[in-house]
Image (cartoon, rainbow, N blue to C red; front, side):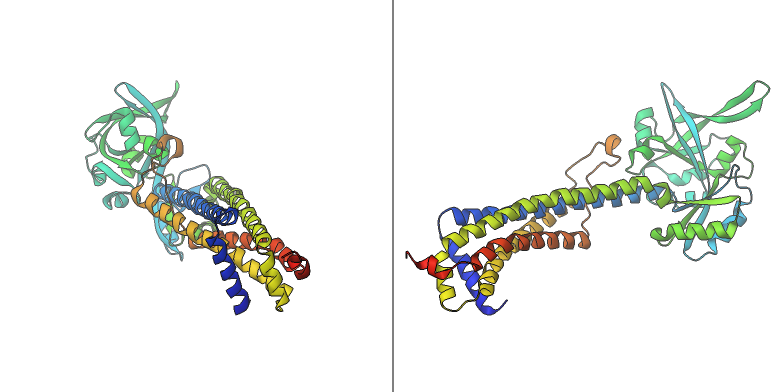
Length: 411
């Protein structure tokens, strides 16, 4: 498009804004429609991206990137296995763990959950990354003698539900008890609360309890055995390939499970929901595009004389069409820019002040997370401008077909 087309388009648009009537109002409504559509898309996609990333972060704060397990039996020589895993490229950490389902009993309360044992080295480092200790001291899990009640760390929701705080005691009952002539009898032992942690995931905070590996081995009678090994990798998105390398190196009966495969259904559903919301909310911009088309039609009707004069002076059909395309694109671009500023501003406020609170027991998160990605913003802007451009084609084509003789016959 040349200087002539752009100059005339701007003059026509500026003239429309000076007029009082339907055209100027419809132009404003069309611009606002695009702005609202873009703003809504940015906020919703930002929230859904933030929800996915926050959920991923919280899951990986408790769960390992890769689990190494043994078919049907605990792992005995786990120190040797861990040393072999640490030699693989991309592996940053490999530590043993024990995982078992138990019942928790406190005065007047009872609940089910998971007892998870971690290596003393992890305990001395302050616990798994991502845990926020709100009461007590996580490193206290490594303290105490063999005759003392084993210290444990519980989630803040369990602390609230069972009314437990550091220094209190709770009984833990394991169905993996002692085998007797009368059958298998559950094991029960008194544990002492040493710390209360918070992950932000209601499921973890309400049902997960940490203890040191030696204390849980003694409680379950495992000897020097563990459930498996937790492996951390440098790039979480290569966890599946590293898991396969570990499985190939160790061979049967060892097998691996990476975090992507363990949570594949959840993250696939979130991705599908994000795509569906993008498609649905793009219809808002499509509705605004009809407003742009309507505005251009009214502009053509109002500017019939001007179009005829331009054609009489030598303007081609191509030039006339380009003039009205520029007009529509300006409306779409201004609306897109306004929506972009409003959407990014709203996301920044949501992220900084977190003034929208969520019930954690419903959503698993306590606040509305927001994360805006450049790729998502670029896709939204491209969709808005593209739809605005398509909305200009037919009105512009109609303007280019105007016969100058018919247009000025009765002037």
